[in-house]
Image 1: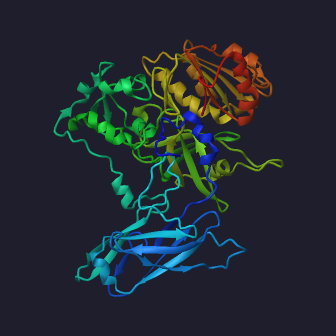
Image 2: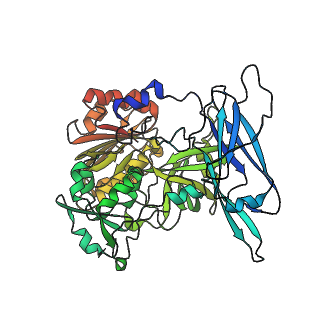
Image 3: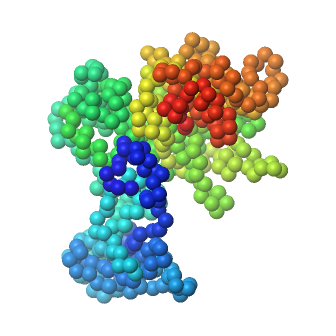
Length: 531
């Protein structure tokens, strides 16, 4: 997409559907593979640089250039196609190499640059062109070099790649993404002072322990002023980085007025040990069987999860030679004072039967033992609940006095997050009605917890169950069969400007039962949202 399209305008003009921006072919690209990241080489011996290059559309890579003087001059690398072309089309990629006979020449070098050219004379650009998805970036590949000396004063050259494969992070590009520090220093504010600035004409925020006066900016905020005001006088670090692009970093510095006073113990739970960009290790510390096909699992991810309400994480694991990734929504922690770096999940185990294969990830989780490690990435997700009926949905601010929820099976987990957040936060008067569908009474997840919440907050929260099979417990009140329009009309709030609908469940349930019923009830895409 054009660089003018950002996260706020991407939904306009049907950018996602425009055929001219569909990627059918790769563009020209190249990389250095050897020496590797942080590899150290002696200057006393020659070395063969190696790497690869490729191009799409059946275009052959005809040249790979290397520069050792910041792109002032270039030398040709030797190309190697490991197999002969088939018909008129060459192989899309090739290997290249270049022998550095005198490694001492690298002492004065600061970086090695590689670029490739294909048979249509397409050449990699020197710089990246920004776009909203970060796709098709094919600028020169640059490896930084630096001489070092050991205890015997022997010289070596070290190499730093822009990024590092895998989930460990690193590389010289990561160093460049360090947030810009505010220019205002030595002005400190206590938490008590910051909390006072929570009004429309006087609004301060805390982001990464720095204090920002955003009063004059609120009217220009793309998400609306209400989505800022709900956080007035509070720490918004986690939410800020979830819903804002990096280009918002420099802009926010204009409003920085100081720093949180060190004696305020900073905001203990500001920084998250989770990472939405890469997988980290999570250690299983507790596992409990809840019923015949449901388990509870607690994972330790660090000191603080910083888990926002309505978001989920991704589990990743190598299962039968296939890397499997699945989303799971934690049911704990909900409140900041609960956050001790532990995530708790209620997992439905889809076991193998004669007619159906088992769920790859759920069966894998079921076999895990205390102390085992799971790869976790997040938080992520399109829906974020703040407080007092304020949500951010697909980066847009949404306000609701009444929340309708429709959940099926494990779709209860993101709903449960929001339900607890609303009911247990003093001053949040948002009303909630939920229709929850399952096959049997025994399949209802978090049944006890939902009953306790409904009994305690009966004027604010109501749940109605829909089961495919009649329960053996004759006293259990529910509907039997599929969710239908009559059930939703009876047990949800009517469609109006104060109500929205949140949905999470099996696609068949949503498309065949829920969506048509909501359409008939007067709900539209403007007030119906899916997790």
